[in-house]
Image 1 (cartoon, rainbow, N blue to C red):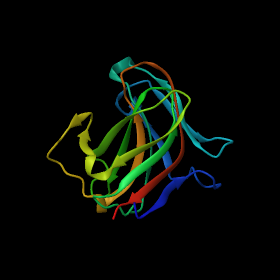
Image 2: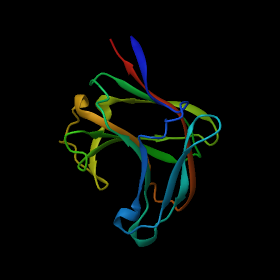
Image 3: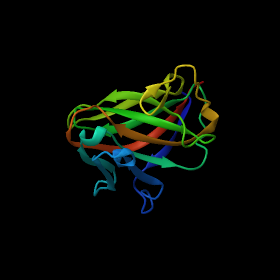
Length: 169
């Protein structure tokens, strides 16, 4: 790996500014996902997943600006979870309300892990459906985030220390 740079960390007073939650309420669901910057200067994405009214997802995302990714880059996230499987999404600035490109990762309960997400492995999805022929142009990425949609009702919590990108040679 040649070098790396931090895309997001949560140690500054305005760290929460670009982030927002989007939950299944947009389609009638009842999940409650929130986020905060905790005393350890990490982002906590937490709440309760509900399967009522055909719901079942909660997400937190940041958009805006070009994140300057290349196809050989690797996104690395340092997270502490609850043992559930989360999805990491990136969003294309040319179609912010269209496809999200995602990869799944499993957390270890109450244990910090670093998850590597190669840019070339992101798969296009729209409303939960996969579109394998829709390729990501990493130079157009303008947002990213975390989503929980594992069809398991109940409380959840994912703590994020930082999000980086590693440049490969």
